[in-house]
Amino acid sequence: MRPDPQRAIENYRRLAPGYDASSRHETPLRLRTIDLLHLASGERVLDVACGTGLSFAALAARVGTGGRVVGVEVSPEMVQLARERIARESWTAVEVRVGDIASVDLGPHVFDAALFHYTHDVLQSPPALARIFASLRPGARVAVAGLKTTHPLLVPLNLSAWWRGRRYRTTDANLRRPWIHLLRWVPDFTWQPTYLGTGYIGSGTVR
Image 1 (tube, one colour):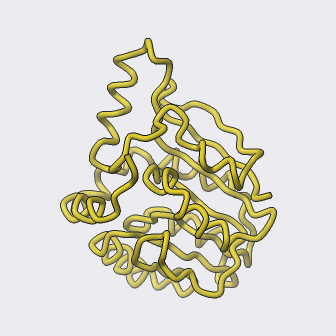
Image 2 (cartoon, rainbow, N blue to C red):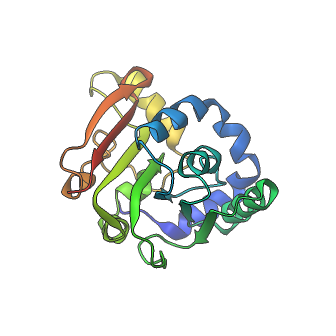
């Protein structure tokens, strides 16, 4: 099954009001993933499927006012919350764009890094990935975290992984290896398990 951006928009219309509260427990993993980008002052970073902008503070702190953080999100309701966050924090180096990342205008930026934090649908869309990696310079760093299934015999753990992510994705494709399409652009991608094998965190560089 392919990702369904329209169904994602409908899902997040319901999820947006409580999204920050439901994602609070992921903060330590989010920060670990951002650390894998090894961002420096003045760099430009793309926050893929940025949601309400929960990664913006950490990203902005690392790239400074001379850098740039660009978030892309398909859900208008999530984007509205992200923009309210930007205004509230008075960030001048952060922006968010609304639309399907397979077709959204990413502007003239050539990014030094890209964050994929719980972006299963995007990872299962080669057109979306092609769009993203066209905007990343060779050698750009990529960091990814998300849910996955584990050994087929470990049924309770796999059910847990499926259940925890069911509201946030529109496809179950490649849940065992969510990064499979990513390898085309990031062949050195390496990962390690989280949550007893029902999650993962990894990184690599754009060839």
